[in-house]
Length: 557
Ligand code: DON
Image (cartoon, rainbow, N blue to C red):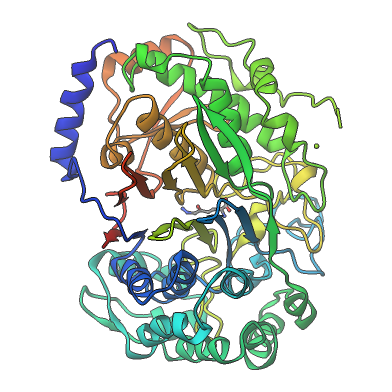
């Protein structure tokens, strides 16, 4: 690698600055990495009690709804990618669905203009929650423990309370203005929190108990369903009893790709994440990334040009496969990647205005991530979301949980970006019952000899895909330690806005000048993505790492 030692000097300085360790500890029985220490502890306890990775994932998922209210949820949705010890692989899709009364122009005024905040705040922004159905489906089909035994930890944390960390206190306090509009939210989050305060959530504990006793009927029917539907009636939301009863999680085939001999399994539509990740890797596989420094103008230019093209196709061709005929096989083929990148110029940026989504010739088709590995060889890569931090900002009054604002992930109007600046079109237009297009990319990578290698994923809206991409490339192409691959700075391009978004102003002046000369626009943005990952050694030992951008923790035993 050219200038190899520059990278190591940078990494060394970087690890001093971020306090990241260069090597973590290896374990043989199990590892859990998630966004909060309390939830990782729940996962580990369940594994130690003899539960498998799926039991741990479900218990952890419910606990996130209590201690990580900004994204953990029972009012949202998510995806699981599971690799079983016996080699089977499945995706569980518990993405929210648009209510039956949703319609294409529901966020537009009579002149056809988008009404501000309608698809992001308040109950009209909410799609039918899928998390409870999805978690319980996973547990009943693939877990080994009783519902009551995996849910008791979440119930205890809600009922007896837990100590609020400084990071959570800051996060809640910084949203107080948004919360003021919603009495149910103010009841629980309407004060200024200090580090160490105890947060007790009695309504949420009662809702969790209903679910623990009655299963999915404890949420989609009966008392809790009545509270949700009443809340909707009083606040202009659309979710009805029929919507709740109709909600079904779906088991789907995982999406498969390869990168330099490594095997990738990841999330199919309604996420765009898997298709875009494999499409990006297919483009980059043709290049020797190691001939330049990781953060050189050459590599940033190359990867940006790949991202620009992939996100252009995302905007046009991806949506809920139950409503739109997504040409998955074509989009993840190596040929399509080659064709899409055939106009790449090594010295010059292609303006996004010059890039149009490719024609497909029809030849036939505040989020949080956690990763779990158990001692049997089962792996769970799970990403779940209520979309924005604290979802639509509404705590269902009397039921104690935040609702999602996932409707904003549908295209409210062609050409109008969503909160992540992503564009959409017909494939992702609003339709009753439709799942909004996601970028969540829970992924598992296997080494060329077929052994588990890496379990990972991240929050970050549209930047989830590139966050996962950076981590994989740094480990496979640049031999970086997991901790450094995760912590090192990231950049992102998504076709529009036509700019390379670079984290933390860390790009050096000379590289910046070269990129500008090539025709790129540079924008410095704050940190993005929070990877929670597990890596395996060649001997089959495992270690986890939780991104230093967040305050999570990886625990093993
Ligand atoms: O499904 C999606 O792609 C988005 N709703 C994810 C939102 C997200 O990652 C926010 N967190 N930073």
